Image (tube, rainbow, N blue to C red; front, side, top):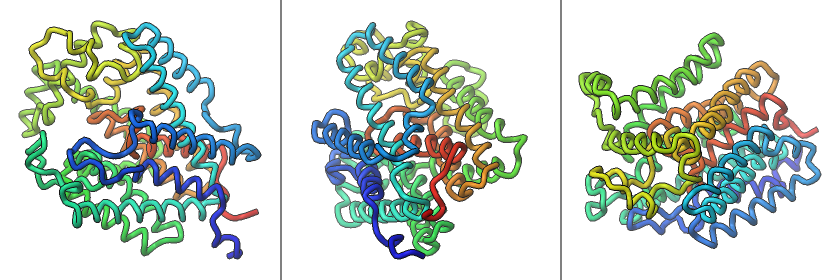
Length: 418
């Protein structure tokens, strides 16, 4: 191994800052009220931080020959940007929508640039190992030393969550999903120069996941590992175990809120047919979608708005923070054209890219990491609002996986310094 392999390049330092910002934030212990302390667009300091990180990352790539893949696929991402901008013009708060669109664009740029910053796979693994270790230490510190921050309390709005671990995350569901991602990072590191540390990260993440009480993420993690193995070894099943599964899952979930037959079938299986109250929110969201199916209500504007509060309804669902389903949320943000564009970007193209990546000579461990994160994310999207949720690590990490699969299909991080 060359001596300069032990040093940190400037690009790797920027990558570490990016991961630490999204995974840890500027105020990791600031959510004792249960509202969360990770980055948000409502905080000027966070906005400045993202702008600085974006400019620094892009400037570092100015002479990088790989910069041509930034914001790829260019045409599709441009169409998504243009469509969300177009529908927001006709919304009840265009100025707010445009600010959020610009912020979302910066996040996409950061996630895309992140994969071009390290010199090679060894540098990438080193950054992941460092950030995952820091994130785990802070989460356990919050639980063990500052339980008023790291553990849900009985005094909070959701008193039923008392005792569930959340660490530096604002909610145990976000913590559970974050720990699932960290476990996947740990499994990758086991094969990428850090066998002992990777195993420890995976084990500690799994323990935290169990104590977080996130049933969905806990059940999904081993299922995702199985799906990833099937994807890699059973080529004819690739479309079925990814896109087909996502479609079936969302048809059943959303059908629960609109079809008595599906509701009865799910209840007959011993499953909570309300999915912890989500079915009422889905039903409310479907009603709003039916009123504006083509252009929606503007980018990230509907929930919590005065417009929504003025709607006469007997359902409590209008008080929800979001629709708890990424595909319904996309329909609310930009109608069916937006949903079609997002499905192409986040489902169809990654399926193709993953298939092509495994047929190349690129690092299969890296492809496997991105594939697992992508599968977990698109399944989680059926139960949580994930797309364009710019605070916290979940959307950023999904974007890294989506862009990573594309790079693995078209190019690669170097496996050694040339």
